Length: 124
Image (cartoon, rainbow, N blue to C red; front, side, top):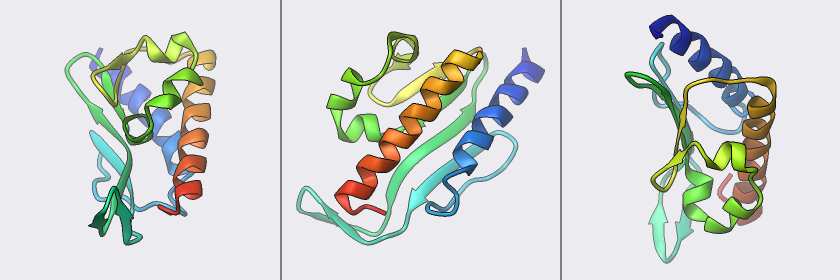
């Protein structure tokens, strides 16, 4: 399982890296990778120096895909297909254990939708 998780992590990481020109990573190693916007913004009346977008972390039996756009806009759940939503545990973490072409497409769609949302809100 450990080797499979590393491979899964690398596949997901390659998808997130497509956004690295806009976002920056605070953690980038073989078990953790994240993306942040370092544009100063105001969210709900609070000034922020950074905004979290997404993160991958290898856990014991899954890769955690933390996806902040779904936390900031609960309406996004309506756009995502059940195959992706069934992996959502809590408010923003998807537990990914396997990745086929269909799920990979759903995650790519989610990243694009989240990117568009952040852009629309002026967070990037």
